[in-house]
Every structure is written in C-alpha cells, then in structure tokens.
Length: 414
Image 1 (cartoon, rainbow, N blue to C red):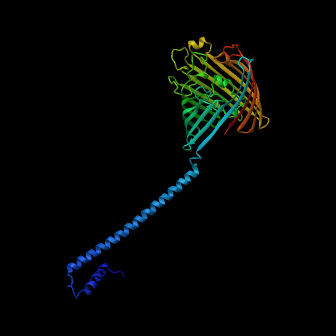
Image 2: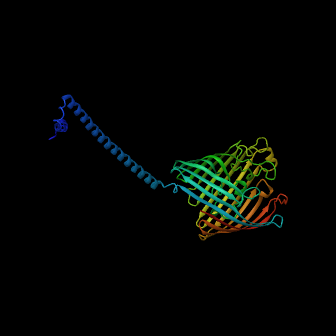
Image 3: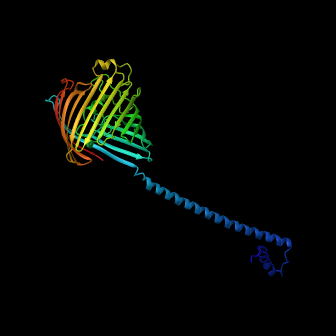
C-alpha cells in the first residue's frame, strides 16, 4: 500500500515540536503549512536533481557509444581502402652509360656517365582520384657550369570519370611513340635510346595542359590533349631543331598551344598498332620569324610472338614558313625497324636500322646497331651494343662525321 508524503511530513514536523511542547507554544496552522511547503519544495528539488543526473548519464553513454562506432567505422574504412601509406607509391629508375665513339680522331669520345637518376612519387586520394609525379637528375651533377639538369617530368592529377574514361591535368608526357611514355631502361634494347625517338619526336617530351583517355573492350583506346607547345629556335647552330624547342614547362611561352590525338589498337595478343597527330599553330611561339605551323605524324607497330619481337616506327614533321623552307628543314623525318629475340628469360639479342633526316647535318644519317641485354632480375638490366653511323654529308665543322661506337650500360627500375 502506498502512503502519501503529507502524513510523513506532518509526523516529521510534529515529533520535534512535541518534545519541546513544554517549553514552547504549539505552532499555528499557518506555520505548520509553511513548514510543509518548504519540505515539499526540498523534496521536489531532490527529485529533479536525481532526474537531471540520470539524463546526463544517459547522454554520456550515448556519446561514448557514438565515439566507439565512429572509431570502428574509421578502422573498417582504413582496412578496406588502406591507410595513407597504402595509398602512396614510390619508385624510380636509373641508367649508367659507357660510350666509346671512334670517328678517326675528329671528335672521339671515351666517356662514362650516370645519365639519369629518376624518382617516382604517387598518391591515391580516392579510388578515382590520384596524383603522379616524376623527378629526374641528368648527368649526376646540376648547377652553374655543370653538365646535368634537375627536371620535373611529370606532375599531374588523374581522375576516373568512368572505368573506361579518364581525365588528367598538370604536367605529363605527350602520348606519342613507343618510348616517350615508357622509357625505363629495362623495357628497351640498346644503351642509348633510339635516335628517331630522340631527335624527331623528341623523347622525353612533356608538356602542361589537360587530356582525356578512353578505353574499349575491343582493344581500341584513344587520347586527346590540349597542352603547351614547342618553341623551336630559328637561328644559331640548333636552328629549326625540334628537340631544341622543348620548353619543359619552365616559364614556357604560351602564345600558341598544341593539340595531340592518338589512336591505339591492342585487341590481338602480342600486337600494338598506334598513330599520333600533333599540331602546333606556331612551332616557334614567335610570329613573323619564318617558322609557322607544324604537324607531326607518328605511327608504329609492335608484334610479339614467343621469344621474337619486331618494332617499327615512323615519325615526320611538316613545317610552314619561309625561313624553315629556305633552310631545307620544313620536312624532318625518321624511321627505324628493330627485330629482337629473347631465347631465354635472362638474355635477349637485337638489331636496329635507323634512317634520319633532321634539321642539322649531323642529324641526317643512317645507322646500324646490334647488341644484347642481360636481365639478372626482371627490374635490372646489363646492356652492350655496337653502332655504325654514316652521315649523309660529311662536315667536320658541323660535327657531321661518320663514326663507330661501342657502348655498355647498367639500368634498373623499382
């Protein structure tokens, strides 16, 4: 049976009053009512305090539970997607070359050079958004009066619009040729890169801008890019030389942009067919200097069957302008063919024939080359080759001379 709080309160009040009744007059009804009201207020205050304490405890429990859930979700996300170290990638490659060139004492060379030291760094922000970069030191030592350079060859953001469509923006390699985008030393034959993709294309060639890349299940892919352009000189020893026009995105003149389109087919195992067009509205970035627009056409084929591989590539520039035509440099072309065989996983042999018609006399030649690669590991290679070059016009002052060369190289990537 429940009892009312009022009788209890009355009892608590009346007992002490009764003990002192002999000394004091009994309280009036009004005084008793006032005392009861005060006691009731204190009881209500105690009840409210208990309720507030219980509510605060419940809220604290809820917050603690939410914090635990958040930590669990974060740990689960990190487990599924990987932590920041899992989203970061580091790599690189390098090449050490020994060149022994004999041209009957006219301009002999006996030289050893750490040609390239390159570091890659990439970071995946999300499954669809990532960053990629490439930093290179050429010839081991850079600075005033030193032979080398420090170059930023790639630094771009890439985003997957769909599984078969990507876009990127920043500084990136132009999609042209075989070696320009894939030039790690373990991926090609010869100590030095072939001359057609060095002089005519000219690898390694990077620009700044934006690009779209599409892929199809039938093996067809395409690339479109809007980038900065070349600034080919029109005077001096390197007049109209394409390779000398690379600005390397170092405060590059951007009066006129370049447009690149590539179509590639890899639908048959072991076969790659590709073609690229690059158009420069003004290949010198200077109007009225006699060098106007330029159009590059490049096409190549790679065929691999068993241990045998065949590579063939053609690249040619057509330039407009009075000065470039007067110099006979409005057509600059080159092609090569390279059969190779890799009878063992560790050893491969190759031969290459090149025919070039560049802007300078020493860039107009025919060359035979034979050699071998030895891979003690898939990411490490030792190279040896022999070259025999015949220039179209011998000109000692222009360094256009025949030569024979023996080369050794060590390369790696990781």
